[in-house]
Length: 214
Image 1 (cartoon, rainbow, N blue to C red):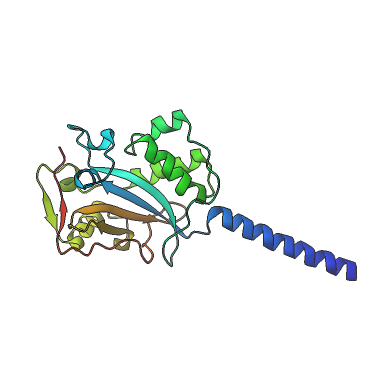
Image 2: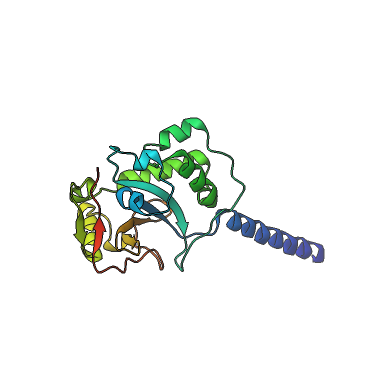
Protein backbone atom coordinates (compact mmCIF):
# COMPACT_ATOMS: atom_id res chain seq x y z
CA UNK A 1 0.00 0.00 0.00
CA UNK A 2 2.89 2.35 0.88
CA UNK A 3 4.59 1.51 -2.43
CA UNK A 4 1.38 2.21 -4.35
CA UNK A 5 0.94 5.47 -2.47
CA UNK A 6 4.49 6.49 -3.36
CA UNK A 7 3.92 5.58 -7.01
CA UNK A 8 0.68 7.60 -7.05
CA UNK A 9 2.50 10.61 -5.65
CA UNK A 10 5.23 10.32 -8.29
CA UNK A 11 2.61 9.93 -11.02
CA UNK A 12 0.78 13.03 -9.78
CA UNK A 13 4.05 14.97 -9.70
CA UNK A 14 4.93 13.85 -13.23
CA UNK A 15 1.51 14.84 -14.56
CA UNK A 16 1.78 18.22 -12.85
CA UNK A 17 5.19 18.86 -14.38
CA UNK A 18 3.98 17.69 -17.82
CA UNK A 19 1.01 20.02 -17.63
CA UNK A 20 3.29 22.91 -16.63
CA UNK A 21 5.62 22.18 -19.54
CA UNK A 22 2.69 22.04 -21.98
CA UNK A 23 1.38 25.33 -20.56
CA UNK A 24 4.79 26.96 -20.97
CA UNK A 25 5.10 25.75 -24.54
CA UNK A 26 1.79 27.36 -25.54
CA UNK A 27 2.25 30.44 -23.37
CA UNK A 28 -0.91 29.83 -21.32
CA UNK A 29 -3.01 32.34 -23.25
CA UNK A 30 -6.73 33.13 -23.03
CA UNK A 31 -7.71 34.46 -26.45
CA UNK A 32 -6.44 35.66 -29.83
CA UNK A 33 -5.99 39.25 -30.91
CA UNK A 34 -6.07 39.89 -34.66
CA UNK A 35 -4.09 43.05 -35.41
CA UNK A 36 -4.92 44.86 -38.66
CA UNK A 37 -2.44 47.57 -39.57
CA UNK A 38 -3.64 50.51 -41.68
CA UNK A 39 -1.00 50.72 -44.40
CA UNK A 40 -1.25 54.40 -45.52
CA UNK A 41 -0.70 55.62 -41.96
CA UNK A 42 2.13 53.16 -41.33
CA UNK A 43 3.85 54.15 -44.56
CA UNK A 44 3.62 57.84 -43.64
CA UNK A 45 5.39 57.36 -40.31
CA UNK A 46 9.07 58.42 -40.31
CA UNK A 47 11.74 55.86 -39.61
CA UNK A 48 9.81 52.70 -40.46
CA UNK A 49 11.13 50.19 -42.98
CA UNK A 50 8.82 50.56 -45.96
CA UNK A 51 7.95 47.17 -47.45
CA UNK A 52 7.37 47.76 -51.20
CA UNK A 53 4.36 45.43 -51.23
CA UNK A 54 2.74 47.67 -48.62
CA UNK A 55 4.09 51.14 -49.35
CA UNK A 56 5.00 51.07 -53.04
CA UNK A 57 3.46 53.72 -55.28
CA UNK A 58 0.13 52.62 -56.69
CA UNK A 59 -0.21 49.56 -54.45
CA UNK A 60 -3.57 50.80 -53.08
CA UNK A 61 -3.27 48.90 -49.82
CA UNK A 62 -5.60 49.56 -46.88
CA UNK A 63 -5.79 47.21 -43.90
CA UNK A 64 -3.26 44.35 -43.72
CA UNK A 65 -2.69 41.64 -41.13
CA UNK A 66 0.00 42.56 -38.65
CA UNK A 67 -0.48 39.38 -36.66
CA UNK A 68 -2.67 36.97 -34.72
CA UNK A 69 -1.44 37.15 -31.15
CA UNK A 70 -2.15 34.85 -28.20
CA UNK A 71 -3.25 37.19 -25.41
CA UNK A 72 -3.93 37.08 -21.68
CA UNK A 73 -7.08 38.45 -20.05
CA UNK A 74 -4.84 40.24 -17.57
CA UNK A 75 -2.68 41.97 -20.17
CA UNK A 76 -0.08 41.26 -22.82
CA UNK A 77 0.30 37.62 -23.83
CA UNK A 78 3.36 35.42 -24.29
CA UNK A 79 5.90 35.62 -27.10
CA UNK A 80 8.70 33.48 -28.55
CA UNK A 81 7.58 30.36 -26.74
CA UNK A 82 9.71 27.85 -28.66
CA UNK A 83 12.45 27.67 -31.31
CA UNK A 84 10.94 28.57 -34.69
CA UNK A 85 11.59 26.79 -37.96
CA UNK A 86 11.40 29.06 -41.03
CA UNK A 87 8.02 29.20 -42.72
CA UNK A 88 8.21 27.31 -46.02
CA UNK A 89 7.89 29.05 -49.37
CA UNK A 90 4.48 27.57 -50.37
CA UNK A 91 2.91 28.79 -47.13
CA UNK A 92 4.62 32.17 -47.46
CA UNK A 93 3.13 32.61 -50.92
CA UNK A 94 -0.33 31.83 -49.56
CA UNK A 95 0.03 34.28 -46.69
CA UNK A 96 1.28 37.17 -48.82
CA UNK A 97 -2.39 37.83 -49.61
CA UNK A 98 -2.76 38.77 -45.94
CA UNK A 99 0.61 40.10 -44.73
CA UNK A 100 2.70 42.96 -46.15
CA UNK A 101 5.78 40.82 -46.78
CA UNK A 102 7.73 37.65 -46.07
CA UNK A 103 9.73 39.17 -43.22
CA UNK A 104 6.52 39.87 -41.30
CA UNK A 105 5.29 36.32 -41.88
CA UNK A 106 8.50 34.85 -40.50
CA UNK A 107 8.49 37.26 -37.56
CA UNK A 108 4.88 36.59 -36.59
CA UNK A 109 5.40 32.83 -36.59
CA UNK A 110 8.54 33.12 -34.44
CA UNK A 111 7.13 35.70 -32.03
CA UNK A 112 3.50 34.63 -31.72
CA UNK A 113 2.72 31.48 -33.69
CA UNK A 114 5.05 29.44 -31.50
CA UNK A 115 2.90 30.37 -28.50
CA UNK A 116 -0.34 29.11 -30.08
CA UNK A 117 0.34 25.39 -29.61
CA UNK A 118 -0.48 24.96 -33.31
CA UNK A 119 1.58 23.76 -36.24
CA UNK A 120 2.67 26.34 -38.81
CA UNK A 121 -0.06 25.21 -41.19
CA UNK A 122 -2.76 25.36 -38.51
CA UNK A 123 -1.59 28.70 -37.13
CA UNK A 124 -1.66 30.40 -40.50
CA UNK A 125 -5.01 28.74 -41.28
CA UNK A 126 -6.24 30.40 -38.07
CA UNK A 127 -4.87 33.74 -39.31
CA UNK A 128 -6.79 33.37 -42.56
CA UNK A 129 -9.99 32.31 -40.81
CA UNK A 130 -9.85 35.23 -38.37
CA UNK A 131 -9.08 37.80 -41.05
CA UNK A 132 -11.70 36.49 -43.45
CA UNK A 133 -14.30 36.74 -40.69
CA UNK A 134 -13.83 40.51 -40.33
CA UNK A 135 -15.53 42.95 -42.67
CA UNK A 136 -13.84 46.31 -43.09
CA UNK A 137 -16.43 49.14 -43.04
CA UNK A 138 -17.00 50.17 -46.69
CA UNK A 139 -16.05 53.80 -46.05
CA UNK A 140 -12.69 52.67 -44.62
CA UNK A 141 -11.76 50.06 -47.22
CA UNK A 142 -10.04 52.43 -49.66
CA UNK A 143 -10.91 56.06 -48.82
CA UNK A 144 -10.01 58.52 -51.58
CA UNK A 145 -9.53 61.32 -49.05
CA UNK A 146 -8.58 61.48 -45.40
CA UNK A 147 -11.15 60.18 -42.91
CA UNK A 148 -11.33 61.82 -39.48
CA UNK A 149 -13.49 60.19 -36.84
CA UNK A 150 -13.54 59.97 -33.07
CA UNK A 151 -12.21 56.58 -31.88
CA UNK A 152 -15.66 55.61 -30.60
CA UNK A 153 -17.08 56.34 -34.05
CA UNK A 154 -14.49 54.08 -35.65
CA UNK A 155 -15.34 51.27 -33.24
CA UNK A 156 -19.03 51.79 -34.03
CA UNK A 157 -18.25 51.56 -37.76
CA UNK A 158 -16.48 48.21 -37.29
CA UNK A 159 -19.25 46.92 -35.05
CA UNK A 160 -21.93 47.93 -37.57
CA UNK A 161 -20.03 46.20 -40.38
CA UNK A 162 -19.77 43.04 -38.23
CA UNK A 163 -23.16 42.73 -36.48
CA UNK A 164 -22.45 39.26 -35.11
CA UNK A 165 -19.44 40.57 -33.16
CA UNK A 166 -19.82 42.06 -29.67
CA UNK A 167 -18.86 45.73 -29.53
CA UNK A 168 -16.13 44.86 -27.06
CA UNK A 169 -14.44 42.71 -29.70
CA UNK A 170 -12.96 45.82 -31.36
CA UNK A 171 -10.21 48.11 -30.12
CA UNK A 172 -7.90 50.66 -31.71
CA UNK A 173 -4.36 51.87 -31.36
CA UNK A 174 -3.12 55.21 -32.71
CA UNK A 175 0.20 56.89 -33.38
CA UNK A 176 1.13 59.93 -31.33
CA UNK A 177 0.02 62.23 -34.14
CA UNK A 178 -3.51 60.79 -33.94
CA UNK A 179 -3.30 58.67 -37.09
CA UNK A 180 -4.87 55.24 -36.73
CA UNK A 181 -2.21 52.58 -36.28
CA UNK A 182 -4.23 49.38 -35.98
CA UNK A 183 -7.72 48.00 -35.67
CA UNK A 184 -7.67 45.07 -33.24
CA UNK A 185 -10.23 42.28 -33.13
CA UNK A 186 -10.53 39.64 -30.42
CA UNK A 187 -11.44 35.96 -30.79
CA UNK A 188 -11.63 33.09 -28.36
CA UNK A 189 -9.39 30.07 -28.83
CA UNK A 190 -12.01 28.55 -31.15
CA UNK A 191 -11.91 31.76 -33.25
CA UNK A 192 -15.36 32.96 -32.25
CA UNK A 193 -15.59 36.74 -31.63
CA UNK A 194 -15.35 37.76 -27.99
CA UNK A 195 -14.73 40.92 -25.95
CA UNK A 196 -11.11 41.94 -25.64
CA UNK A 197 -9.20 41.75 -22.38
CA UNK A 198 -7.30 44.47 -20.55
CA UNK A 199 -4.56 46.33 -22.37
CA UNK A 200 -5.76 45.38 -25.85
CA UNK A 201 -5.26 48.89 -27.18
CA UNK A 202 -6.47 52.38 -26.54
CA UNK A 203 -6.48 55.29 -28.97
CA UNK A 204 -6.32 58.42 -26.84
CA UNK A 205 -6.63 60.81 -29.76
CA UNK A 206 -9.71 63.04 -29.80
CA UNK A 207 -9.95 62.46 -33.54
CA UNK A 208 -8.33 59.51 -35.34
CA UNK A 209 -7.20 60.03 -38.94
CA UNK A 210 -7.06 57.53 -41.77
CA UNK A 211 -5.01 58.79 -44.71
CA UNK A 212 -6.30 58.08 -48.23
CA UNK A 213 -5.44 54.84 -50.01
CA UNK A 214 -3.48 55.57 -53.16
